[in-house]
Length: 316
Image (cartoon, rainbow, N blue to C red; front, top):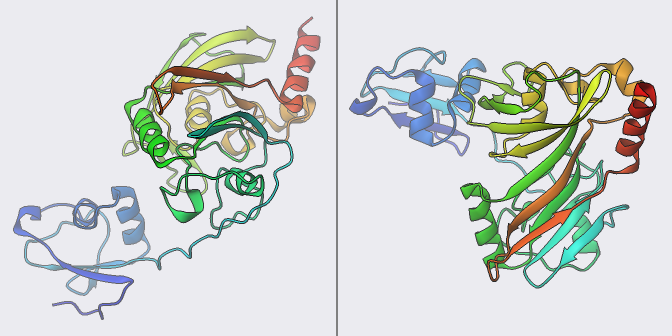
């Protein structure tokens, strides 16, 4: 029986005979319904025991034994505060949805550790009513952009729009197009990167191409070539966190200015970049109310346009 007191943060689970011989991380993931990566992290932190003895992620479980895990406390709910967002532009607004052009330095929604402006807070300050579906701090959000990525986002205002837009993202029928300035010249100049993306094994704030990551597919095409960089049109089949940044870095062509994923700081300074050169330039989907195809485009912000001007001047 369990040697640990049963608390909201501690779970004690009997191992079914059907899991006999499974690795600890695999068994824990199946029993509690979270990823093997998360299970492995708990084991590495000394939070997993079998019949009272601490175990690692690769040890095997026996049917009838007790698997004990200490879970982190549930996150404290983050409150949405109405706060105007400077530079956020409303591209489209109707009864079902609103499309915004998100500036750099703005998060999609509140999250622990982020105290800056958010799309949700900006919409609330402007008096927009959004869908109540989803977690309290991200209601209406059907997809996200990184804080350091600018461009187009759609936010659901009605419950029907939320449900149907989420389904389109799951079905991969949304046309999400980005432009990215990457270092060097990809070979081939147009191609597909198909590599799973998961949590970085050493850095919690980063993602990486990992064997146990989620499937991720990125298509890219050359728009314009410079002496030391390439402007790419990128289409995503999947929407993993930091997907473009991770894939281009793993392909040895990080986004210019993206110091987190290996970009050259000298080039970033020369181009005046304080963030990754990555912009969500086009967004197309079937309108959730009547199914008609709608498409929206966004121009480059001033900092990204200026970086291209510098490159063109150097290449002339």
